[in-house]
Length: 113
Image (cartoon, rainbow, N blue to C red; front, side, top):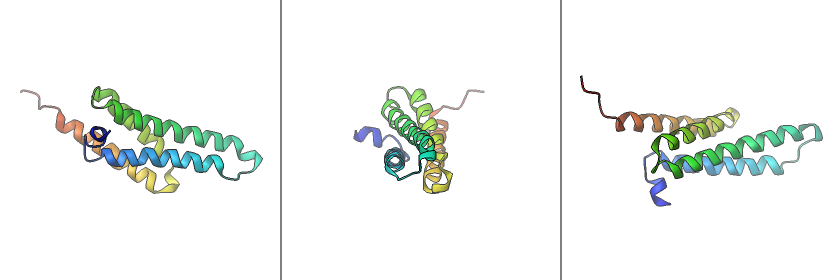
């Protein structure tokens, strides 16, 4: 588990973002909504769970399959950025996306000219 969170400077933030999405799903699920908002709550819970699972799976898979892990992390971050009114989730998602992209750019060798 520690290898998963030590793979890059942004990995702990991605782990916290995944946990925040799971917690947000629980909060949405147990909140006292009106009957006409039930379908909205179900969609919100599904979006949060999908984002949290994508982030966690991407962090877990990235050491073995870097490309697949990066894609899963970015998809999870995009689902987290959907909650723009929470302010914290999209900012954390943008930081993680920038970290994934910058670490991938640094990892690729310069092409021979």
